[in-house]
Length: 262
Image 1: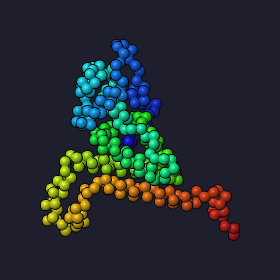
Image 2: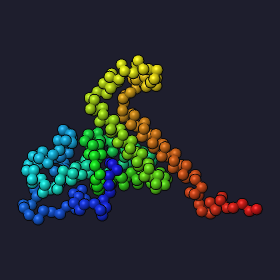
Image 3: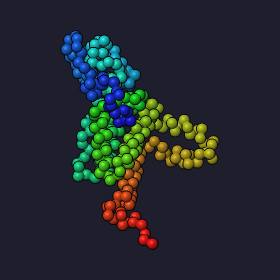
Image 4: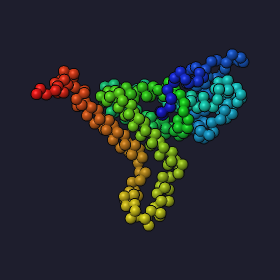
């Protein structure tokens, strides 16, 4: 999930995630579907990273020439768009409707994070350029906004709450990628500690955190802690809005704000 563009009239006509690519008018009938090719490309990216996804490599994986692959995708960006939209499962269900909205919101966030965890290339792919969001991506946004609508927040604050949650997810995914590149999170502490100790008077709080051994301990718990804080903040915001005068029934509001007779 990301902040990419939503389909509009000013976008280009060819977009495979929305099924707007015209079928080829010449040549043999395609033996593959764009979705099959995107799935093959996802496997390459999962195993070797996004840089390994080239038209030549993907064509080889599905048994067609590079030029034949262009019959399915006008360019690599179109392939990436479909990979992104195909990387997640359906967003249709995040718990029983009878469950509290806060529990379903947390489930949405955790499942969203699992996309980044299962597909390490996903963060980079959704960050490098502006693009159209696909129908499956938009179903995830539809699902979370429907959940947030139950909180009692105003429409504007529902959108703000969504941005807070997805920002937390993507921020945690970023830290995950940094940790993976360093191979072992403890290396960061090992390298930094000798530099900090002579300057401990400048960084007393940081030194206490390092000495306590809490840095990078149990990142899943850190994610849940942040998510709990955000959800409780949303709940508090919704409660405060329900007490605002402009949310009172009109008759009662008129009595409260009626001018005082002199």
